[in-house]
Amino acid sequence: MRKIIALALIVLSVSCQKDKTPLNDSGPSDEARTFYLESFNEYNLANQVFQDLVNIKGDIILNAENSLTGKTSSSKIDVSVSIEPSDLETFPKTITVDFGPSGTVGRDGVFRRGVIRIVSTGWFWEQGSVHTTTFSNYFHDNFKVEGTQIVQNFGENENGFIEFDVEVNNGVVSHSDGLNITFDEASTRTWIVGSQTPFNIWDDEYIIDAVQSGFFSDGTSYLLTFDEPLHYVLLPRAVRSGIVNLVIGGFTGFEINHNNRTTTILGVTSTF
Image (cartoon, rainbow, N blue to C red):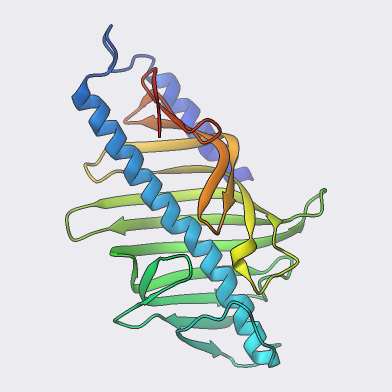
C-alpha cells in the first residue's frame, strides 16, 4: 500500500506541473483523438497481459501443489510443468511452466507460448507467501512479455477476503510490428469470488486498486490511478466496473469509466 501511495504522489506532482492541456475551443482535433485512443488501446493491452499473469500464476502454483498431493483438479494446465524441489515442504520452490515453442490456447482463448518461471516461498494460499515470476521467450497471443512480477499473499482482510500485493517491475509488452509498451504497477488485488474453489480459476472475481506507469510505443509517458477500483471477472473476461484516470505525457483530462462504458479525452466523452 505504501508503494501505491508513493506512486500516487508522483501522479499528483506531474498533474500539478501541467495545468494546461492541448485542447482548443472546439475540443481535441481528430488527429489528437486518434493518438489518445491508440494510447488507451496500448495501455489496455499491457494491463490485460499482466493481470492475466496473476491469474495464470495462481493456477500454476495451486495445480503444482495439487499434483504433489495426488489430488485431481478441474483446472489442469495442458503444458509441461516442473517443480523443484519436488516435495510439499521445501521452499523456496521453483516452478517452471513451458507452453512449448508451438504454444497452446487456454480456456480463455489466449494463445500462450514460451516459458514462465515462478519462485515461491510458500503455497499460493499461504499468508505471507511471495511468488516471483520471470519469463523466457514468453508470448501472450503474439505479444512478447518481459519483466518481473511479484505477488505476495497478505491474508484475509476485515471482510474475510484474501488480499494480494502485486508489483510489476520493468514490464514490457512488445510486437514485431514495432509496438513496445513499458509497464510498472503497484496494486492491491482482493479475491472476492472463487476462493472457495481454488483449483478452478474460471469462476474467480477480483477487486483491483492500483497505480500504474510506463511509456507508450512512441515514448510518451503515462501514469494511472484508479478513482474507483476495477472489478475483474475471469470468464468471460471482463471489467464490470471501475474508473481509471490517466495522465498522458504530463497532461490530465483522460478517463476510462467501466461503469457507464465511456472514455473521456480532454473533456470529450464517448462510449466504447
